Length: 178
Image (cartoon, rainbow, N blue to C red; front, side, top):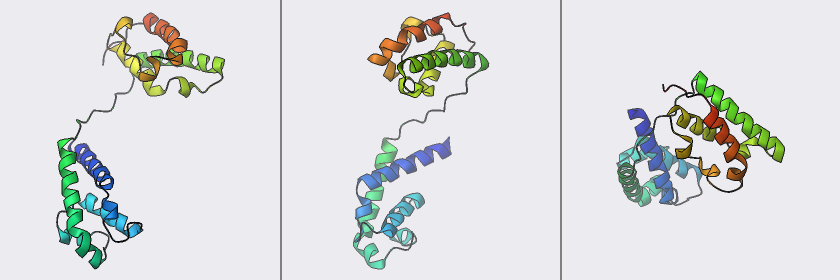
């Protein structure tokens, strides 16, 4: 988890540095090597001019002109990333056999509707959204309290899919929690 958090903060930091225009700090902002320097500075968590100097061999005049400015942007982005770091969520667990059976039933309904409307089934509902429904069933959530995926909350998808999916959902045997 610590490694994931560090990677998340680093990726968030990189996004913030790029958003703040750090790739334009150097004299030739379109120069590929300048962008490599910025990326390397974020990866190495550079906080001094010496550390910047070791990042992808920057031109000395660029480092003199823009080094302090880049360090300031990196420091600000580092503070922003750590203050707004969202809690990491564990990836969803794999479906059990019983959950897999319900998933297949729901997917069959979606496939049937997709063929009926001559569209790709993914246009109606994707795998992750069906798994969300299956996990709610495993958690014992009643059909009336079901949290529909965003795409199925309103509109034509809800009109076409809610009733048949709800029928499969309510008729499925309760699955034990893992």
